[in-house]
Amino acid sequence: MFYKLYHLNTYPFIKRLMRLNAIQLLTNSAIMMSVLFIPLLAQALGASGSEIGIIVAVYGLMLFISTYIFSRAVESLPPKTLLYAGFLSATAMFFLQMFAYDPFSLGVIRALAGFSIGIYPAVMILYVINSRKSIGEFSSYMPLGWAVGDMTVFVVAAYLEVFAADKVSAPGDVYRDVFALASLFFAVSFLIALTLPDIGVKSKKKGDYFSTAVLKKNRDIYFGFFLRQIGANSVWVIFPLYLVFLGANKYEVALVYTINPVLQFFIMRKLDKYDTKSLIHVGDLFSAAAFVALIPITIYYQAVAGMILIAVSYACLYVGSTAFLIKNNEDKGTAAGLLNSSIALASIIGSILGGIILELFGFRAVMASGAIFAVLGYVVVRFKKVEKEGNLIK
Image 1 (tube, rainbow, N blue to C red):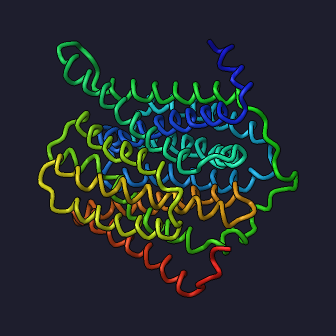
Image 2: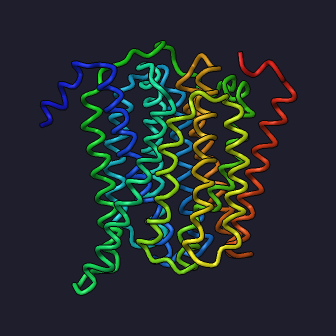
């Protein structure tokens, strides 16, 4: 079977994209499985709201550091080496999550996991550009991966809580099984990466890790996305707890989460033909509407409307921002990769902010903060457009 997989290299473009899509799906599935249950596991291990925010924040901090370093390095280091390093380290770190025994150990392992998954995203973008394929189609496998991750958690949790309720099992079995599967998905991604052809990097020059040229040129895109993601991460760090507060059990939490990425998968595939700046504006405004819609709900299934709006908003925002950066920058891998750094940095601030707001003001105040930051993101990009009309898109 693996022999046949390896010889897919006979068809370099179509088959390469299929493998890239498979890796995108598997890695994002693994990431979502952990993201979904980390707040619940942290709470079970005795973490407070602020400590949950810190645990998620250190993961985001290491992800930011890693994506920044390797987004710069992607133009000068061997791409396949970065893929191998990322997938192998993630396989180990996601497996170790099941051995966390208190909030501190969980935070340390999550920090290492965050660094590992920041190594490979810019390389993946470089492969897609090299294959001359749709960035929207490739991006759509990210939310599809989230959906697969959500549904995997749903199946595992439903089995342990319903179908295996009469059997003797430890309360942490659901976390153990989910983390083991996440590790397996990264291991399979590594095996697929072995079959990818080498792609030449544009230059062998030493990476200039402290250059701000790309950041300055695209500062409105990065900063607008950054602000929106601060609000979004403040919501997502406590959202599983919010759903439980509204009456959901573990597998119902996973089911609600699945709505957003499934819709994103279909939406992202249709967005390449639209103006990139318009997509960004729609993404910010729909984000604000989505978080507002989550404020008045009184039972968990009423969150469906908000999740639909979030699907539209993030699909437009991510594809629009990524496509803009690729079209308007010479160092395409670096420019697109730094968007992931913006996302990671926002997760640090948003995670801590969400935990603090939860402790001080409650769940609905967190949703309101998400809406406020989304509006601020819209203002930043819109203001920049007016200031330099005609000079942004060349």
